[in-house]
Amino acid sequence: MRKKVFVCTQGSSCKRLGGEELYQHLRACSESALFVDHFKIKRSGCLDLCKHGPALWVKKDGVKYGAVTNLIGNLILEHHLKKKKPMKDLFYKKSKKKK
Image (cartoon, rainbow, N blue to C red; front, side):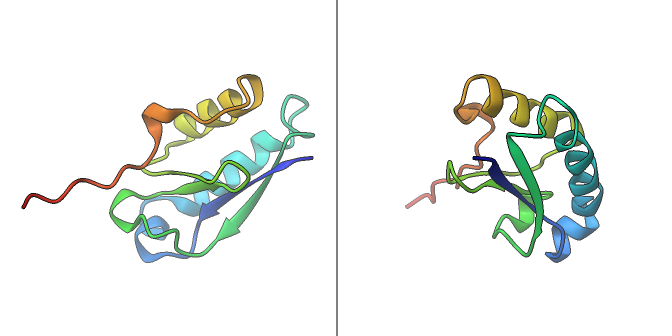
């Protein structure tokens, strides 16, 4: 079963920061022999990471990544394919508020 990867292309920040270009890049990668049976890349609306766009979400793993470049997108796909788990050091993390 292919994992669905959603790339924010409609949120204002992601749109401005290259979400559509990231989507096009990952879509082309997902059609290569290495990834074709593993990933389905889809456009999405806002993923609530506006300050950290462009953003993507690997639905099956429930993981969101922010500030994703084409290179980082490739690394995410490769890691999810080969290691079958998310890249924890690239997760989007909410900062803790000071009290």
